Length: 287
Image 1 (cartoon, rainbow, N blue to C red):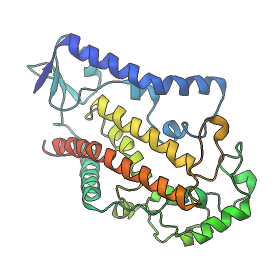
Image 2 (tube, rainbow, N blue to C red; image 1 turned 90 degrees about the vertical axis):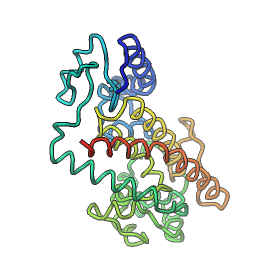
Image 3 (cartoon, rainbow, N blue to C red; image 1 turned 90 degrees about the horizontal axis):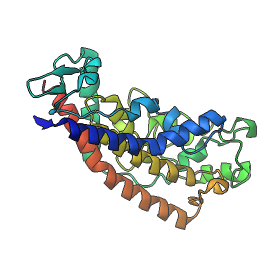
Image 4 (cartoon, rainbow, N blue to C red; image 1 turned 120 degrees about the vertical axis):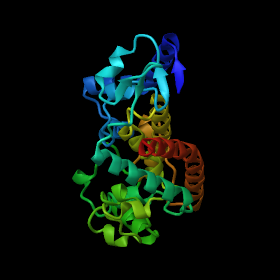
């Protein structure tokens, strides 16, 4: 058990809040103005972790908070120990234990599977394939190609999306074109660490493990997810240059090569985060 003195854990909590507010404050300001952001809103809408929860710091397993830490005891996961206030795995509900077991198995399987690096971001194109202009998700922004050209790019690509939560947003005529057909039930069998969305989802798993996951781990996963989201949208058929995002032209050989380099880098950066999440799962299951 690591014991943090009051001035130390309060300093960590303050640093965490400052770090997180660089992301949550602009989102809140846009929301108050009624503005939508096609890149960053996804991180607060699809990922349903409220900014206030995100700003809340947790010390993680095997850390006791000395001094006046009564506020943490408002959460049922915290208990008082001889060393101080700490999270406890003792009363983990059975349904949550089952989730943690499932998550550990999936993350461990991803660690052993080879990274697949040949999807080239075509999933975003498949989400507008043969779609009416008024039904396109980000229709406030232009597409880089006319609809018939986008349809041709999708039809001539080897569509091979392995991530169910991207595949499920394919338009109905695009779904049969995908080499893989993941379902919600089989999604964990397809997850692999070369997938941009699978690495973005490390943030989701981190906050779903809260308050057992350290606040710093949740923020580290968010920071990676934010960078991935930028690349994901730059590789899409949308033209976001007006808001500062130059396209990655995956319809060309040069663009596909650049996209693959991003995939490799994100897969590498996701590995230590995945290992830390597995560590939290194993600590919970050992109780």
